[in-house]
Image 1 (cartoon, rainbow, N blue to C red):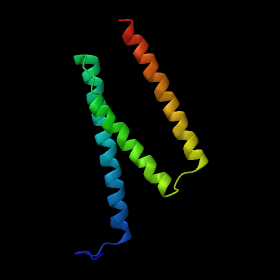
Image 2: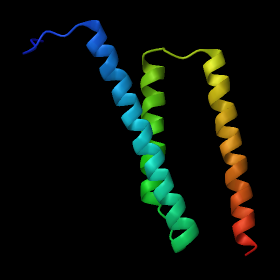
Image 3: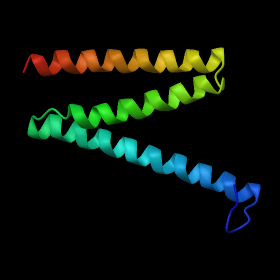
Image 4: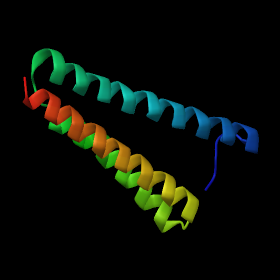
Length: 98
């Protein structure tokens, strides 16, 4: 593929970090909107929450496809998912009693 401007590895690395940070800000921003709508407005925003989950699934699928995962990484992901599930269950129980 031809490029209009020659780029070195440093520029490519900076682009990857910038894109990663932008995606993180976007994901946490959408999660904050979902939380605000849920707690303050009493709305459910499953469409926005679904987008965040879908982006994580796509990233995970890409990593699996490129075989860029390790057992330690998978353990960290499983622990994170478990903690998130426990927090979700606790929040659901607290909000259900109100």
